[in-house]
Image 1 (spheres, rainbow, N blue to C red):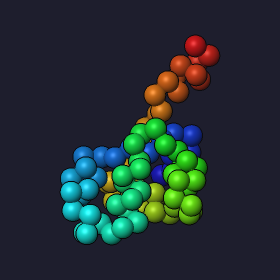
Image 2: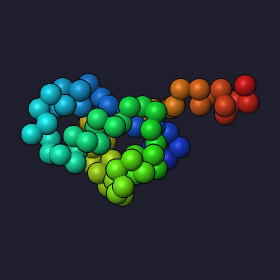
Image 3: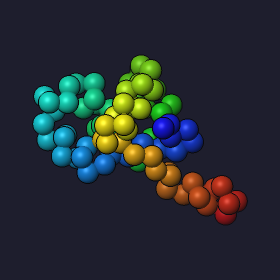
Length: 80
C-alpha cells in the first residue's frame, strides 16, 4: 500500500528498531530517522537523493512505517 498524498510516520516497532541501527542496516535506519509524519515520498527522495519507493513500501509491509495525514491537510482539503 502506498501513501500517495499522505505522509510516512514511524510505528512503535520502528521506534524500538532505531535503538539497534546495526540490525536495520544503514539505508533503512536513515529512512526511518527521516520519516517524521510530515514528509511525503517525494520529500524523502529529495533528502536522500535516491528513489526509495520500494524501500518505503517494504518498511510499511514490515510494520515499521504507516501512512498518516500531514498536520493541517484536512483543513486545506476542506478549504479552511
